[in-house]
Amino acid sequence: MSEVVSTVSEKVNSYLTKIHGEGYGRNSEAPNNFRIRNGSAIVNISVQEWGDDEAAILFRAWVIQKAEMTPDLMFYLLRKNESMRFGAFGIDEVNDIFFEHSIVGSTCDLEEFRASLKAVAVISDGLDDEIQGQFGGLRAVDVGSE
Image (tube, rainbow, N blue to C red; front, side, top):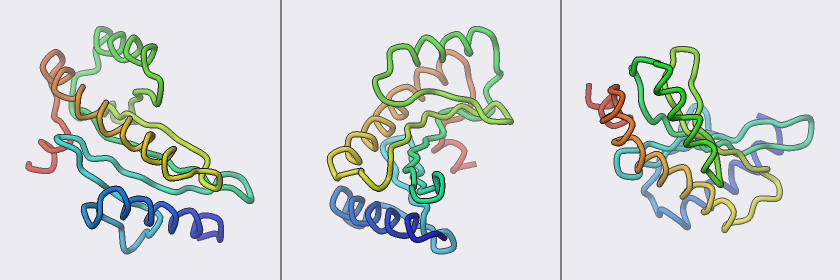
């Protein structure tokens, strides 16, 4: 792990402690990865290298998995993206739906971190039930309980 990723990871750890106390997880094998739960949403936070001397903080929540990727669902996600101030919906290589937002690691302060985390957590928790109700699939907490 590069020095900048290590430094930003410690900053993220400090911010999560201030925001959530001990209510978050940190991957012991990948100490630049963290996880929090908000309602039915699970937000993964990872610190990733960005060029030679910078790191990005990526907030990603898996919203719905195993839904049939129909034109109506894709249109729904694109229309929702248009109204988002922070972040956007995306789909991965197996068509699972996520919501994510990234910020620059070295210049991030506590309030920017808190706003970014809150946006991803609240949007994901608020829309996973709506998407599941209209298009099917499983929410993050449903997958964890399988």
